[in-house]
Amino acid sequence: MLFTEDFLHYVWKFRLFNRLNLRTGDGEELEIFSAGLHNSDAGPDFQNARIRIGNTVWAGNVEIHLSSSDWQKHGHTTDHAYENVILHVVYRDDQPLVLNTGRRVPTLELQSRISANLYNRYHNLVFGHQTIIPCEANIASVDSLTMQNWLTRVLVERLEKRSATVIAELNLNRGDWEETFYQFLAANFGFKINALPFELLAKSLPQNILAKHKNNPMQIEALLFGQAGFLTDKLNDQYPLKLKKEYDFLRKKYKLTPVENHLWKFMRLRPQNFPTIRLAQFAALVMQANHLFSKILEIKEVKGLQNLFTDIKLNNYWENHYRFDTESPPSSKNLGKASIDVLLLNTLGLFLFSYGKHNQMQRYIDRSLQLLESLPSENNNIITDFGTLGVKIKTAFESQALLELKSSYCNYKKCLQCGVGNKILNLG
Ligand code: SF4
Image (cartoon, rainbow, N blue to C red; front, side, top):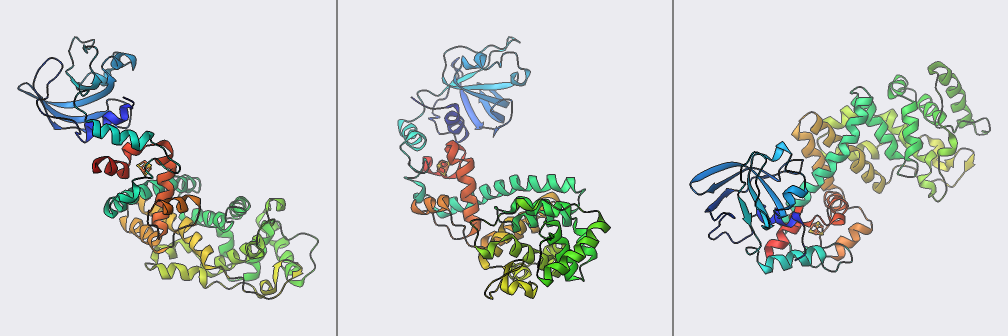
């Protein structure tokens, strides 16, 4: 038989073996009251199990191996963490287990107790033919409640991982949520291609400087375009020349160093996504919403969050320009719905979750999940693949969870730790 210890963990955890007339290797009667808590850290595999051997009830740890001789091979003989193991569960009992203390550890052998049916289902799931994911033949048959519960859990895992990055930056910003939010929002205004220069720009221009000029749109734009390195000596139009004049003054006043202009990318971008347009939109948002993160925490409705981005007004200059000094036919430069959805998903959703988690305030975590439920699914190859397997995906809540499922579970064949995999194995 071809399987890993993980399979035995799964079999023990859900007690998927024949439990009639259980006996230890020494022939004593064995009864299992509780399999214990699965331990993914160092130490025995299950903790706080409760069993009866003969007339004695035991509470303690359970260790699982393919063969009982693995105890020695895995170096447990000299490890004190394993001294209070009350039961050694193995597929094959090839050697009695006696600790250094002289105590003989009871062993349960599972070899003859696991059904061929269960083994075959496991084998087909984990080692069968696959083109997309291991469970591709069965995932559509998993009921929607199981799917929904599992996707919720995986989504929370994803948000927890991503919020660790937020908290690391928050610590660098000495606990300043507004500054941290401003930096992340700026990076997301770069929409991947210009995320780095946008982030560097935000870090080079603290938002408390912008706040001092919140009533002067010209100065806000001057600070942002100047720090981005776009206000060079080679400008012709009146508007950028005025910005440059403002920036030259403010730069000296705040001792600012602009980011390197060559970092900004225009190539292969639609003009609507040029960094100059994104900067003008970002400037309009900064002007309109002072203490933006506090405002976001107060807004309870998704519509209210969307309005923050739809209501922004860019300087008229941008109506017929995509870059300085180059006129173009007039067109709206407001943020499009798809861009707003990305900002809501990647910045607002993440920050509501991180704030709620960090401050143990469930209502912000709930608001984050509601926001994701209200946004449409992303569109990429992974989501398309899940769609072809019959998985129904409508919202960003589902698409984000599936991205996490694929990258953290399916790619590593962690089907035994997966709610979907557990359901498939139990369906047969
Ligand atoms: S990890 Fe879960 S969803 Fe992914 S292939 Fe395995 S059973 Fe399917």
